Amino acid sequence: MRPETDALVAIDIQTDFCPGGALAVPGGDAVVGPANALMDDFATVVLSQDWHPAGHSSFATSHPGKTPFETVQMPYGTQVLWPDHCLQGSPGAAFHPGLRTDAAQMVVRKGFRPGIDSYSAFFENDQATPTGLHGYLRERGVSRVMLCGLATDFCVAFSALDAARLGYEVELSLAATRGIDIDGSVEAALQRMRGAGVRLV
Ligand code: VGL
Ligand code: ZN
Image (tube, rainbow, N blue to C red; front, side):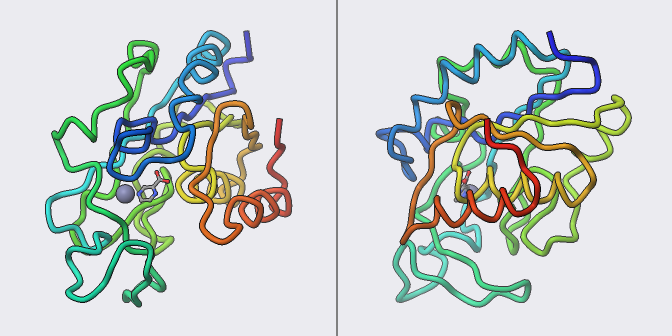
């Protein structure tokens, strides 16, 4: 068992990010077993859940003439456009049915503001609007987080980089994460995380 100062944060292990889902990550469902196993080691377990309203600004369908995986400029910077995914309350937004959600004390939802996406479980994509997760972990006395989940190169990487920036010791479980990988984005994300002091385990 890890010390009480360690938390497991499992990112977006949802049906839409698994094979057959709207924004399937290759092999995404392979993270479920390892993530479940990790839960036994942590006194604090948090899940994040991508949770978009219909017509969300990160959806290609909200930008006439655009197709998924193209980018647009938003007030907060460049935004990749995605297929419609993780619609609030839809089956695709549900956690993977095999995930041990009962082991989590806290679920943090993100991406619910129509005009801004949120990859990180800590801050939205403007890098400034907090989700509340940092306050929760601080109050629980957490100083080290282990991240796992989907997708390595987007929500997991942004969460890991924010956690490092906030002063947490950060670990990433490579066995319990999978990436989307657009033009080498997984390797780039791993490099950035290493550079920020994230321990890849
Ligand atoms: C994610 C793209 C859009 C993720 C969420 O969980 O990595 N990626 N929304
Ligand atoms: Zn999303």
